[in-house]
Image 1 (spheres, rainbow, N blue to C red):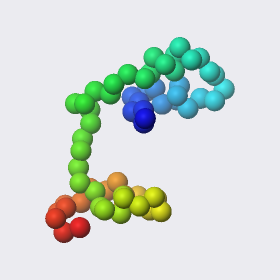
Image 2: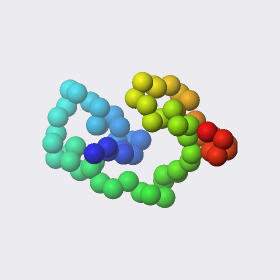
Image 3: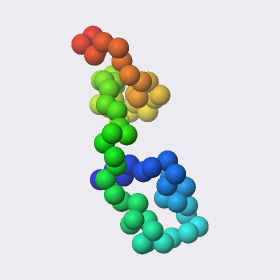
Length: 65
């Protein structure tokens, strides 16, 4: 399952020099839904071969894709 981290916790999560399982476990909490935003993106997202910045760009008119 993906983990959504607060920006200030990213460094702790990615630090390979330090491993504190209790600290890392404490980061695994539900992310505040008010901090999230959903928006339509291109159907190119559906293919793993597409690893492009365009995959996360909001599209203005999803009915045209």
